[in-house]
Image (cartoon, rainbow, N blue to C red):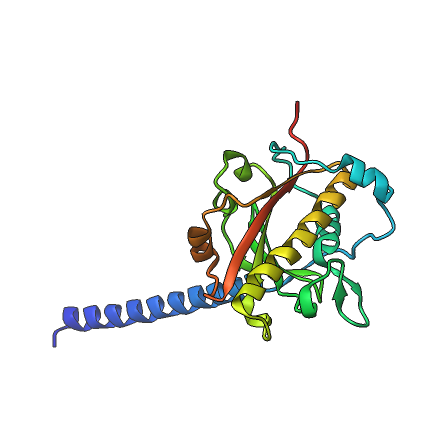
Length: 229
């Protein structure tokens, strides 16, 4: 082998080592990013001593179909999710809304501009599901993409062990209604707009959210500040 060939082989070996090192660093960075993204987002403790009297909230309860794109502060989002279906009796783990047989089968997925999250009531945190904005996919009306928060109520039939299929359909719909009304009353108290929706492409959204076959989307609900006049 002549000198030129030796130098080419040496250069090739060095390039391979450099490439391997670069790939190793890239994989480490990617793994770290994935690990960071997979960490739950701890919400601020809910403020449970505020709000307006119940009768006033009932008087103000309404549906609004226009939203400001302004994002909700972290504290407001925390209070909203706790009011919807948070743990209000830590000693028993029971929630702010009733559920049949205490199955607690309704999961709240939270679509934000920064991604899709699952609300974990036990730890009052958000578990990241997707790192993309899927708000527009949570409904078939144009305005849903403008709402800073879109809640998707998903029934996990695997948690409903003793129920028949008809029971699961009935009770999951009823339990979702309780949660949605909690959201309505919270929004009335806080001067927020909200809109519960059944007009959802459920098969497409289920695929986007990577739901299992025994997870069923029941309703979605948009929340945000009122649209600026």
